Amino acid sequence: MRQHYRRDDATLYIEKTKFRKDRLIPAPNAVITEIDNYLSLRERFRHDNQNPYLLAGRKQKPLSLFQVRYAFHQALKDIGINQPRKIIGNMNFNQPTPHSLRHSFAINTLIKIKERRGSLRHALPVLATYLGHSVYTHTAIYLRVADAMSRKRLMDFSLWQRLKT
Image 1 (cartoon, one colour):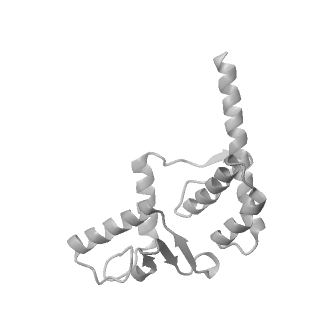
Image 2: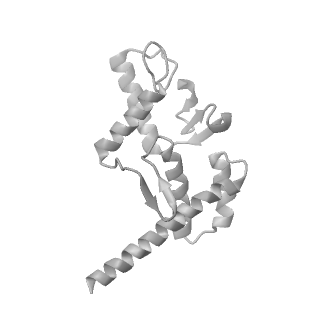
Image 3: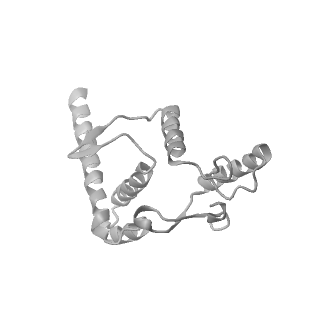
């Protein structure tokens, strides 16, 4: 819903996500700018300021899941990161979906904490709460991906060093 966008707080309120949970998520300044630009253009050119949905479909309805997925995959193609299924370590990764953004956020957050030599043990419960996991061991699954990516980078670096000599 449009009123779930809170520009002053830089947050989005999301209703009934996975397991029917509601979430309040912070939005980066770049996202706030894009939403403001979108709403401004929508108001100016479509004259549908009355549509109650933030991402408005037609006839006062929200975007369908199909429309969201189509736009997501088109954006992936446009920016050149439309990737097929791949395996990293012992993990299988299917083609990206909109939900992949959530996984990317979790993995990249853990990688940044690790790079700063922060405590992953202290970070996991906080990240679990942020993601809405009731048990932080569900969040610990992302550690396997972060570790596999680190091992792959080390292996790539050692191969590069061997090829260089």
